[in-house]
Image (tube, rainbow, N blue to C red; front, side):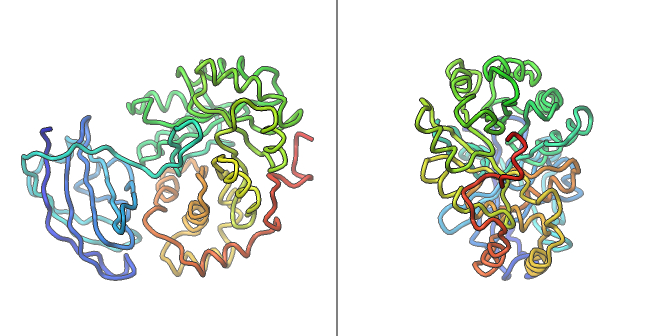
Length: 386
C-alpha cells in the first residue's frame, strides 16, 4: 500500500522526564483517512503525550501499547498540519520537560497502521477501551457536548452516559459532530431501573443518542432485585439495539443470583472504585465470572485528590494526584471512566498509560481502603434504591 514513512532523527529524553536518560528512534507512517500517524517505538520506561506549537492541530493524546519489552505510542496529526518537509519542534512531555525531534517526510512503501488503544475484551468479543469519559452530573447542553468533544479530540473512544443523567442527547450530538466513525466509539448507556421495560427505554435512548445501537447497556442499579430487569436487557441485546449488556452497582452475591437465571452473562459490572473503596473481593468475583469490572468515581468526586499519601506519590513520580488514582485502578485491571468538564483535566486524565506505579506505591494506595476489601458494590446505608 502506498504511504509515507521515514526513520526520523534520534531524540533524547531529558532524565527528568523519565527515570533514566534513553535514546530512541521515531518512525512516521500515514494511515487511511485524514491523519498522519506518528509512532514512537523504543525500549523506554514511558512515552508521554506530545504537543507543540508547530503541531497546534494535533488531535489526541498518545495511545500507548506494550509490545514485548517495548512501548509503542502513536499520535494522529491532521494531514494539513504536516505540510512542511523538515519540521523541527519542541514537544512538551510533561510539566516543562522537553525533548526535540525532527521529521523528514519521504515517499515510500509501508504497512498501513491503525490507531490502537488499550482495551479489555468482553464476553461478547467486543473490545472496551481501558479509559473513558463519564458524564454523571454533567448538565445536558453545551457543558456536556463540550466535555465529550474534548474527550474525543484528546483520544478517548469510550463515552459513558445513562438515562438517569438526562444528557444522552448532548452525548449523541457531540459524537455525530466529531466526524469519528460511529464504529470507532464505544458508547455505553444505562437502564433506569425505576422504569418498567428495558427494551422500550433502550429504543428511547437510541432516539436521543441519534444512533442505531449502543455498545454496552447496563442495569444502573439492582432496584427490584438483581434479576428483575434482566429479561428486558436480554431482549435489547437479541434485537441488536445493545451489542453488549451488563450491570452496575451489583455485589458479588447479586451477580451470583443473576447467573442462576440469565441466558446471557453480563459483560461488565460498573461500580465505585478507588484506593479508598478498593472492593477487592468484588473485582475478584467479576474476574472469576468473566465479567469486566469498570470503575466510576475513581477520584472520589475529587475528595481523594488532597490525600497526603496520594500527593506524596504524585510528587515522587512527577504526576498529578488524579493520574495516580486513575493509574492505580488501571493497574488493578479495570476499565476506568473519570468525569470532568475541563479540557485540561480531560487530557490529564487520559495521560496515564505511559508510566507505571511501583510495588511500594501500589501497596501504599491499597492500604487506604476503607471497605475491608468487600464484595459489596455499595454499603447498606448507601443503597438509595433499598
